[in-house]
Image 1 (cartoon, helix red, strand yellow):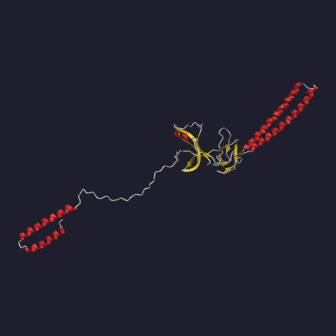
Image 2: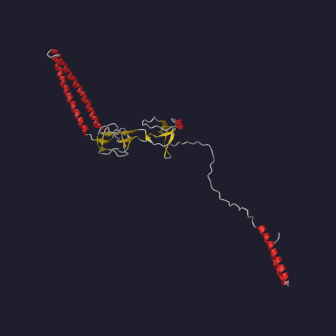
Length: 301
């Protein structure tokens, strides 16, 4: 290889020596032109061997490695979930409605309170029914008195008939009056029982034990017992049992009646239960094509 630096140094020294020795300007000009040509050739050689080609691509910059999670595939048991929209309902549920008409005078529970069967929840003004019960008791007493008189008349008529002192028709009338009086006693007793039931129904009681909802009708309102009596409140049993009714595709109907499966609410398992079919609804609502109605009944594990 040609050492360009050494050549350039030698040329400079030679030039100084030569210029100092040359006296003719023409010789000096020729020497300078030769030196310029030699420098140009050296520069071309450097440009050819030390300049990178135009189409050369820069070396790629190495990127840092990204950490990833690695899982080894292996067979394992999994549970396939099917999510459906539904709600949780208590299995034992009772609606409390009035059985007598009147104005609500008392509410004897707090919203969400636990009650026992027979606890008084509402009081409907009992005074009209208490008066009716008192009248029924008086009517019963009157019927018994009339029956006693009719029986005495029958005994006297029977004695006179045996003595031939009265006509047979009069005896038959006395016997009929005694029978009617006995029937009146039974009617008065039934009326008294009904009146006492009305008094008892004025004190609306819890039909089952559980947790009571809120009062749907507040104090001072008038309630009736016609068809479609208003709902006063509702009671659900404790959470020992519940259902989760929902609609599901017919493709999973084969799972009905199978083993217990976990029931989830909000992503958490709240219980274990089994799918059971529900009867068709009687409110005119029908499921869409390809779907069925069912409930997931909760079971104790």
